[in-house]
Amino acid sequence: MVAALARPGRELAKQLLMIQLGAVTLVAAGMAATVNVEWGLSALIGGSIFVIANAVFALCAFAFSGARAAKKVAASFFTGEALKILITVVLFSLVYMYIQVELVPLKLTYLLALGINICAPVLFINNNK
Image 1 (tube, rainbow, N blue to C red):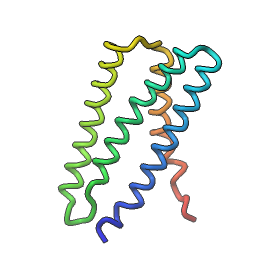
Image 2 (image 1 turned 30 degrees about the horizontal axis):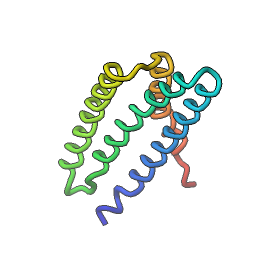
Image 3 (image 1 turned 90 degrees about the vertical axis):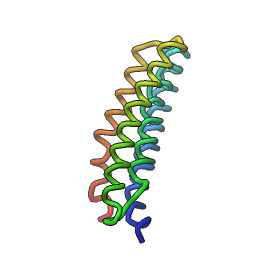
Image 4 (image 1 turned 60 degrees about the vertical axis):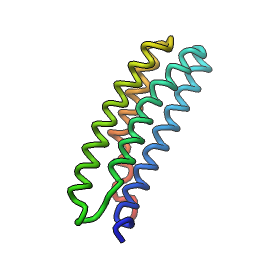
């Protein structure tokens, strides 16, 4: 029963991650085809940083459910958010130090994935009518 409470949230998180991944892949392929391969790769890396961090957050946020686990739910939510921020900082640091990337597509696709994360939940509201 308790696991069933988290199932709709997990499904929405999975849909959101798939939308983000699809948009990032589409933009990266478009940039690779129209500008050059370096822009496409940079775009893919930038969007992937956000998608990976968001996936870790979703795993932590929906680890527990139910009224009896309220403290665990809150703790896992905050742990997930802290991990998301830490992973984002670490991945950007690694990319800046070890990979030669174009900054414009890297930042644009990161911001695109962030914008999807902010705006896409509106698509899921009242979708079950």
